Structures are given as structure tokens and as C-alpha cells.
Length: 456
Image 1: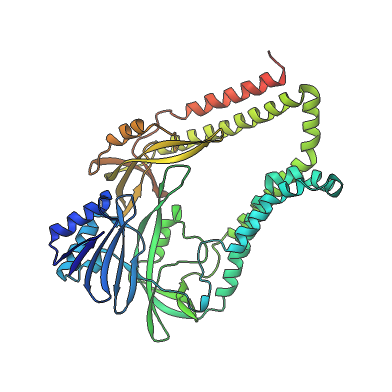
Image 2: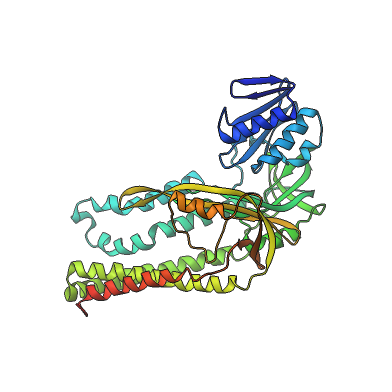
């Protein structure tokens, strides 16, 4: 057995050697990859993801495998230690999935939007600015009529149509797939970490379902539940109850690529109606802007002047938006105060940075990272929400660190969770912090009234 990290190697490493290598990778001292080689084309490696967790990759004569989600540092040390000592129990601590590749360049069913949908939305977004540079004689009447409506609803409508069309094509394709009996081998909650460049990262709890089935004489492992998004949320508990470990299921698979498989090949109920309802609502908004937007703006400009009318609309719209946010935050806080609580444990504590665009400048903000684990109905959930209501405010690094310091790693905490959606939780109940939204809304309305000339 050989241990490798960066340009350093060690034969027959001890448990202490492996733990030191993992810590060095976590701190970024040598390299972010720790590798154990057991022989030719047989290895187990851990790649640090930058947040204290590692992704594992394994290779042997049967193929290449990987973990579906990164795992914590302590578990990585245990897995690598058992692998180095020849203990087969290491496999039970990290569920590995095969690096299956779709043959013949066939596109697998997945969550990602296709390239054609992305291009279509981009064309819709930039179509109006491009048309605006054409000669007035070409666009007069037509562009001025649909311009405001398109700015409000055009790209959103195109995006929704592209998503629905993409999913319907997948449903049609899967309708001809054969089926095979399978067995559920894993049914638990998985915490997926979503990173955003312009706001703090978040944890999303999703149902993690794995199943095995046989096709063409070979055994396959599948993880995808359906063609629709497996986004979890309030549906997580119901999904896990529907597919318990050991349960028998019917698996639908692509005959040319059996690893491309699902348990449900129909779209979730209500998706089509929901999309049609949203499109109808956007159509009404677009028609209202097209039909009444021009006359209203002309009337306001005639009474207030062009500059004041624009200030009136922007400030009034911002005030209305903030007022709606205030009512939503108050409702969320009221519901959160009635949530039950359970004991939890902090598994990660620190800070993270993200970039915000303010007045054409990029500003670095900081947020506390306090991730905690808790059990509901015998299942482990994770969350990073500290306080209700869920309002994120950018802070200085010192301010974010001060908040995180209240919750050091390993601390036992009281977790308040939504019984209808256990993945939604917080450490602190509402303290009236949402009132600042009402203050900002009143400021917006005040500016609008001043711009109208009613006072001042």
C-alpha cells in the first residue's frame, strides 16, 4: 500500500500517516488529493472540495466508482484507514456509484437543461436590444408595441416553454423503455450543498434513493427517481416512505444504456397545469403592460414630468415589493414560532465570502457558516439557517465570524424544524428582525409621494 499526497509518498502508511495527510489536504498545505494505491489500477483517492468535505474515487479491475455526495473529514479518515488495513467494511461507510458512461453519445435523462434551451433563452433575452438598433422604419409600430411586454415577460415565457418542452420530450422517449423488477438498496435523506457566487451557499435536503436491477444479464444501480426534479422539500418524507430499503420496484431503463433508468417515467402530477397557469398569468401581465403601460406612463409624465414620473414608479414599485417581503417574513416568523424542536449538533462552523454587485462595483461580503445535523423520524437532516425569518444580510468578516463563534463545531444545539417539511429548520426563533423591511418599504413610498409633488 502506498500513500501519495502532492509530491510526497509513503509505503505501508499507518493510520496516523493517513490522518495527517487528510488534515494537510483539508488545510491546503500539500495538495487537495490524498491517494492510496493498493496495486496496479487499484486505488482509493479523496479530493478536498474546499468546505471541509471530500469526494471519494475508487478504481479496480471491475471499473471506476465515485461517491454521489462529498463526505466529512472524520469519515474520510475512517474509510481510508480501513482501506489501507484491508478491512472490507470501508465500502459500507461510503456508498460508491459506478462511473457509467452513456454509449454511442446518447443523451441521458437528467436535470440539466439542454444546450438548445439555453440558446433559445439567450436569444429571447437579447432579441429586443438587438432589434432596437435596427432602423426605425423597420421596427416602428411592431417593436414599440411589444417592447415593454417582452421586457417584462418574454424571456421568462421562453424559459418555461423550453423547460416544459424538454421534459415532455424526455417523457415521450422514456415511454418506450422496457421495464425490469428491482430492489431498493438505499433510502435516506441526502444533504446537497449548493454554492452561489452572489449569495451564501445553502444546504438542500433531498431523498437519496438507490436501487438495483438486472438487464441483459448484468446488474445495474440507479439513483434517479423520475424525469421531474427530485428536489425534495416537503415531498422528501413521502418519497422515502414510498421507497423503503428492501422494497421491490419496477425500473424503466434505456435498452441501449440500462444505467440510464428511472422509477417514475411520468411527469409529477400538477406540473403541466402549474406551468400553464403561470404562463397564463404572465400573459395577463404582459397584456396589461402592453395595453395600459403606455397611456399610464404618458399621463404620469404629463402631470409630474419625465424624471419625477420615473422616480415615482421605481420608488413605489420598490416600496410595494418590500412590503410584500415584510408580510411574507412576518408570516414565516409566526409559523416558525410554533415549530417543534429537537436536539442537534453543529458539524461545521466558520465563514464564507461571496461577491455582490453594487453600483457597478463588485463588493465582497461575508456570511456565517453554521451547519448542524438533527434527527426527525429517525432520519438525519442538515441545515445552515440560523434565524427565522430567512433574511440574508451581508456582513463584514469579523461580524460573520462573531456569529459563527456562538456555535462552535461539536456544540449541542436546539433545532426548531417545520413538521411539514423537516428540511426547513433554524436555531433561533424570530426576534422581530423583519421590521426593517417595513421601514424600507415606507421610505420607498415616501420617496414616491415626494416625487409625485403631493407634498414638498
